[in-house]
Length: 167
Image (cartoon, rainbow, N blue to C red; front, side, top):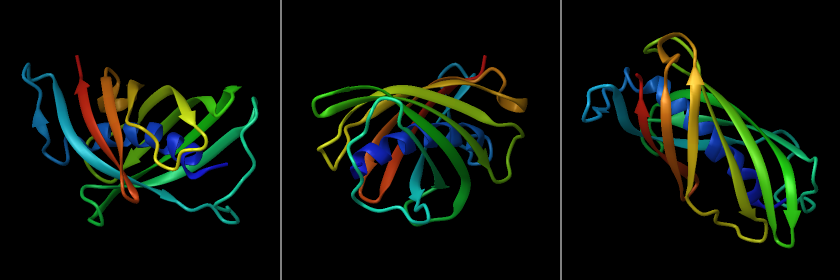
């Protein structure tokens, strides 16, 4: 499994994390005043025993991983997430993965957030492309959260730009 194959799940998971951090981080409010726009950085937590080279994915493979979430690259840790991706299709050098993630942030409003994406990954490419991830809901203060997160590789991190509505 290549690095890009593992990182695609991280892109989906970190999406969820930023939403709950929004109120605590004083993000810019959306034009209508019913949402948030802000940026967080996700860095995958290495799993014990994981190696850089793994076999190519097969339909039915499941990848589970976690990220630490930061306000800035190398800055204060503000939360964590967990993501599970299932390979649903493999065709040549591409794999479709259905990824679902949940995030918990330190401090701020209460609740959890969920996000998901069906991502097509070039399994031979080390640098995955940008990805839009759907915010699908949450609990507590985030029970009506909707929107999307644009995730872009940024060195050892993934830059997560959140566009969230809460009405």
